[in-house]
Length: 544
Image (tube, rainbow, N blue to C red; front, side):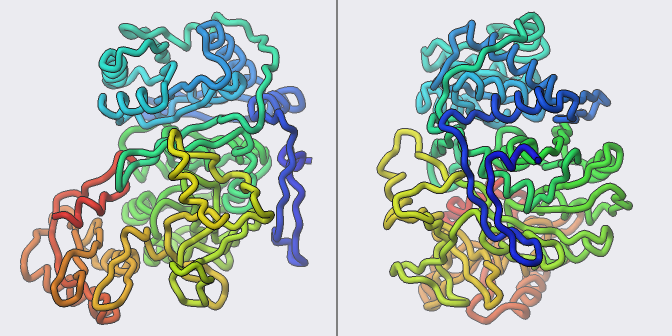
């Protein structure tokens, strides 16, 4: 029996497809003790983590090693006064120390706050004041320590400061302290209902929101790993994501370890598609997940044979059908898209490579009841656009994997649960086969000439033009139509903007779109305004 089966009762149809999954767990379930430490007892040499960086360094860790190192780390943090409920901000990029610190904080019952190393001083100040952060564990690289130190000084708070692998002014060396600490750490009292994880969303339309998950959250990613990523027992799964983003929790830790797969971590700053392929082949990665942008660059740079790879997935933005086609042509693998939010686990996906539909969000996860609901509260019919909502199986129940609250904002949390269902704020439609098609954030919907238009369909068409590297579509005020469709376009290197190219791109796109979806305006830009997570700030573009 694989460890995840202790917590999951699965139901399958006659063809072996998962149709339902019921999760059960004790009131004190804790990923650190009940997964990592359990593996260390049952299969101490089982591979957990394979890590390498661009300098040629590499490390491999068994579950026994992760268990011991996390216990040592928990002792260090505990002796410094970190305990149950304390909030600890962690900015460790893709360093292997993240996995040690994360498990240690879970064992302590502290709240892990993963963030990107790209935060500014202002960003840190906001998080310190909003979350009442008690400690930091951050990378030794770059000027992160200096920014954190300045932010703490600005707030006047007293925070514990750690970095890794070396000492920095004002910071203790956590690596050195772990080595000297006791490997014995007795189980602490924690509750599955305690807050375990806090993510700050990227803030595309306002200040970042604090999204809180409890200790049941890891179990929600059994479906993510087993049935979307198709991880293998004793395999090696590689998700391209920095530890500061929720995608890292989806693909680099919880579900993969529960399902018996090791995780591959490539510690890099600047993306190199050829190096990515080299890592996959060198370490014999079996399953792979990356945003569409990564696949786009991989396809354009040329993909050699990927001999070990058996399954590939993607999420984070819509996948261009041409990238889907070229990747399958070169590798024999169909990319399987998935959809979810920082607030949730995987909600919908193309779970089967053979039936994967490019551009589709796939079908609802067997773990959730997903409904498409129109603005008037009635169910959307086939082809009609509505809001993606999560409907509890039992009235008043919060499905496992759906967040437990917004930090300090109970009213906003009540709003997204209006009517007893979770409102994602994303719009989609369902086709006659039951596949869902993303239409956009409700805030991004363009109302033009009496029609409602999602920007992503238009962006998908524009991306087929050979001169376009990146694009973003918004609605801008227009006296005749209410809103006109405007495209912001970044051209490929060496392509010069001009009126003739503008006309050519309009003709190219509009010939492939219904007339009410025609691109009316184009603005060539050198780069898109983005959040630190890489999402385009359409709000800013609508104002320009």
